[in-house]
Image 1 (cartoon, rainbow, N blue to C red):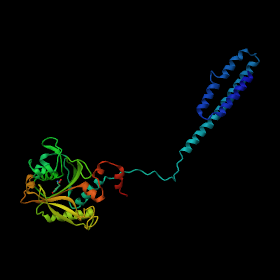
Image 2: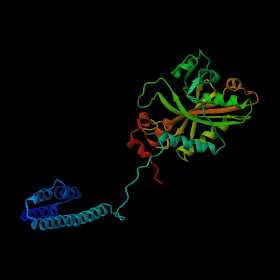
Image 3: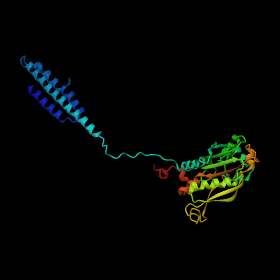
Image 4: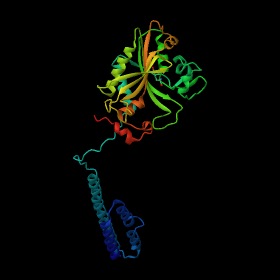
Length: 345
Ligand code: DAH
């Protein structure tokens, strides 16, 4: 029995020695010192011993237990200390390492163009106006001198929701809405950026949804020269100080006279290149003097008041300014495209 106890002690100490984690150590504790362990098993044979030997064996069994227990305790402390040590080592922070770059977003190129143009006109005393994208036929067409049968409606293939409601095809209805609110009293000086919709097939230069910026000034004694001066300033600010503008006669139902406005090519300076298609000029917007019918329909006295208006496509301006060759880039949200417009601050 004595030998068996010593053997068990030896076995247990070897197992403790080999244990590499607390779980293994606990298993050793349970198996050697537990109620169903081998030491208890050995002690069950005590009954066969003489009265003299019994206390000796009892004392030895206790001693073996104590030794095993003390070894487990010691090993446990060692393992715990090692675990803390390992955790500390894994959590050390090397403060000299360079930081991980933080991904930041940036403004969409269209937002940048809109904000740039807004800033420019706000600087000239304009306010920014907005209108609904789901618009009444009345504001989108009729109040702009395009009655129901007007052939020019065909030029803007529309998404109708009901006979009288459609997705606006232009930002011009905000002109009529704003004038109505002014109750026949000038001055009105607004620009309105916003989304517009047309039943176009998408390709490199067409999109069924795009953005426009509309401008409207109504006051006493507004003349064509005011329009020209304003647009000249706009062209220089947006495309460069050396730019010139050119007005070509055109037609819009809501302006009379109407003009198409070209800017001298910012790439070749007017000599002719691929951007201006060898003409030296780039068309950027439509414009004109507000038609008296439009003023009257929205409650302004056309004998007292006059005005000018203009409208431009934001994508077109952005494409020209940044050299983008496909309008669909603006709407497919490819970050490789969008990241190119990151402003380094
Ligand atoms: N609304 C016109 C369009 O979508 C653009 C336009 C032309 C707006 C002349 C105007 C303007 O305000 O005066 O084609």
